[in-house]
Image 1 (spheres, rainbow, N blue to C red):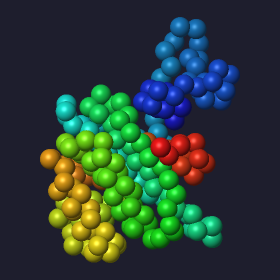
Image 2: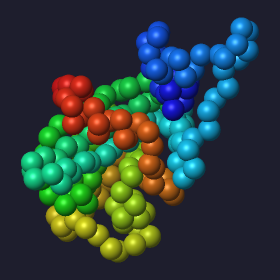
Image 3: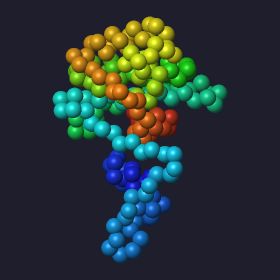
Length: 186
């Protein structure tokens, strides 16, 4: 996992840490070999949008520990992978489908405010993605939220929701960082 993080996210291990020890070549001039993920784990790498487009990755998180905490976050990146803007904030506790929809709405509003009018939208809520792609009528969100999402999507010059939903390390890390407040909301 450390080698994946180092190769794909710009993180570097601290010398002498367990991560750097795991990534260190075993002998002299030998190259460190990337480790395979454990069985049942698929590593997914973020793919950039086409030139002239931006990509919104959004996610929501609901804690079921009695704390009533929920959070949303997202990242908008350009075709070179540079962060255009990001957001992370707490939101009212609700079922996960509603929290995911809040993250999408917040991300779309920020994208439009910033002038991102050619937008690819990716999230990990398969029910929401299928709904937006008109592949399903099943929804976990109120009609008013769906109407707002459709209005925001229509406000973009061009917007696509990919054929697949994404479960990516970046989204998992984003929610984890929100939970410990390492990301500051602008």
